[in-house]
Structure formats: C-alpha cells, structure tokens
Length: 494
Image (cartoon, rainbow, N blue to C red):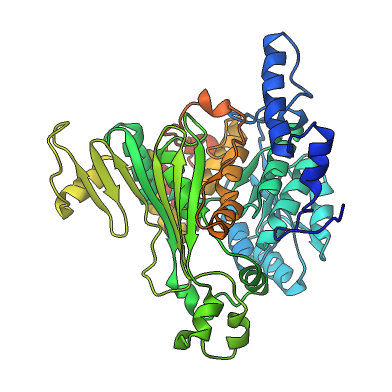
C-alpha cells in the first residue's frame, strides 16, 4: 500500500489499514462500535477506563480539580497572543507563567510589558519546538495557543499529553481525523480542550442565547451563521500560512465565528447534534482572475492565480432533530462585515447586522414587523446577566467589543471554582470539522456528507448550556464594603 498524504496532511491509506484490522470497518465505524461496547460494559457493571472514549471517559460536563491560581503559558505572542497576555494579566488569581515564540522581538514586547506593570518575571522559551518545552514545564496549568492554524492541534495535543489544559484559537483544526485525536486525547488525559471562540460571548450573541433559554422565541427551527469580511480582500490574506491554504483547498475554512453561537442557541451536543451538510462553492479566485477581475491586480497577482478557494462558500446543515442552519463564508468579495447571527423560533426571530427582533404579542398572533423601538426594548429586557454585570468594563478593556474579556472571565472563573466550561472538546470538534466536510461536499456537487457524532451519543442526555455568570467577589475583583463589580473591576485595570 502506498502511503500518500491527502490534502489534509493525513495518510490516505490509514483507513484501509483499519478496515483490514477491524473486519471491514473504517476507523470511525470502529470507534462508534466501541462506544456502544463501552455503554454495554457500563450496563454490565464494568469500568469504562479503557473502553471507548479515547481510553478515558466522556468529557461532557467534565469538572477538573479547582485551581486556586491559574498559571498560564502562551504559545505564540504575535499580535493576538500579546494582546491576550496583556488582557489575562488583569485577572486576580492568574499568573502569566511563561510564553514562547520563534521570534525574539515578540518575546521582548511581552517581557517589557510585564516589567512595566510590575508583574513577576515569566519563563521564556524561544524556537520552533519551544512549545514542547513550555508544555512539559510543570510551572503552567493552562496552555493558551495563538499560533497559525496548522499548529493549533499539535500544540493542544502536546499540552494535554503533558497534563495541561489546552485553550486554542479558531478553528482548532482543519480536518476530521485531528478533531477525533483532540477528542480522544482530552478523554484519555482528563484535561480540558476548549476552542477560544470569542463570538459566543458577544453582547448580541449572549442576548440571543438568553432569549432562547427563556423560550421567548419559541422552539428554534432555523439559524443563519457566517463570516463575511470583505476587508480581507485587500491583499486577500498576505500571511504565508493562509496563502498556502488557499492554494491547496476549497470549502469553508473559517466556520466557527458565526456557527458557534447558533449551535449554542440550538443546543447542539446538548439535546441535538449536527447530522449532515450540503456545501456549494463557485469558481475559484484563480479562475476569476483569469477572466480579468481587476481587483486582484498588483504585486501578488501570480499568487492569487494559484488560489483554489472561491470568493463565496454556502452550506446547509441539518440537525438530527430537524433544524436547519445556513452557513456562509465570504472573504473574497465586497460585503459589509457580518456574522449573520440569525435565530428563528416558532414565536419570533432575532436577526443581526443590524439587530432586529420581532416577537408575537401572543402565540399564533403572527408577525408584527421589525421596529427599532421594540427591538431596543427587547435588547434591554433580555440582556444576558454577564453583560449586565460587567459589560461596561468589558468594552473598556476591549478585545472585539469586550467579548474577549468576558470569554476569559468565564473560563478562568470555571477553572478556579471547579465548574464545567461553557464550551468543551466536543464543541471544538463539531464546529472545526466542517472545514474538511464542506470541502468534501462541494467537491462532490454539494452531495450530503455526514457530520460525526464526537460525543458518541452523550448529546442525548447533556443539559443545554445554562445562563451562568461569575461571582466577581470570589475572583478577587471586589473588596468588602465596595460599591460593585463595575467600579471595582475598573479600578483594578488602572
């Protein structure tokens, strides 16, 4: 058998080996069978330690031992990583314990920042393989990865194998096999593996989640999610690692910003799951250039001609419970920035960009039409408790309008207090795997492609994501006798 790498960097012949070893079953079929074997073993009174679930146990609702202090090590301190390091330095009970990069000047920026803020010195690791040394060092509890796409999974895997919780930028990985590897490693090592999908913590997204949990929109039936960002057409991503991807792949390579929040509204992996999708994509950027599109003329023209990626990808996802999600990506055609962010229920609808809300006055009374005044009333009435409590200071800290601050506030609070995270490794895998699955579907004339059940059936009994907040006093932001969280958190930022 010839071991030929496919477009996702995996060995194309691997599945044939699995079929030969498992009596004709593919690796995925084998794992599905193992999950049923594991359930049967539990029913018979057997332990689950080494049956199914990556040799470990399910991570749905997983609670790690409490961390009184959260020691964070940053892998990659470019613009995104440096900003995250500065932001996390604001939180009580968080230590910037280490950071690494391949470029010394970026390390110096972080070093100088910590000195200027009179923060303790962090351990530094420099070089292409430095992340391995950082992960192996026993002075960190959390590895926070802000590196190019292709390094997300290797860093997260190394972190978990070294006993660290892994927090990784989006998308967490670009292929289905790596999604399974992350899931199985998280289950086996009993370590969190969370994708840093900040858009789940946006003000409007959390407003929509709150309305869905309160039943204001009725039963959700349809959603729209996307990433429409024509600002990237200027040079269409000059970074080397993205340019390489565009020359080798098609499909939706950036699905999670829009999809993550809609998946939470619809209780994906918590009462429902993705079933299959159909994806379509038009001509590639390279084909359009050859037809004389003047937008791409310039110094990078020859590079653009090699792009396989199209300027627009559109996919339809159906869930097991019969809900539909429209998922769009466009970074190669003029379009005002939008994540679409629409959720339709049986009693009303929320549409974003711009925000519009319409809810029946009484069930069955029909639509009233969008009205700015009523939309604002709904926005104030159903604002998520997290945004009510710390929204003003989140905007002051910044980070995509404050969502980055609230995201970090939540996962830090959960680690410090022994609570499940809002997003787990199954969310990471279900959302990220669409990079490969949309490419497969569009390559086959939009034919349906099954989306794996990374939970192996656990979605059926998982409870929906709750409307949770944080106790800022317990985190150390508020002192006894002081007015409230907005004032005292604001004071700590000075």
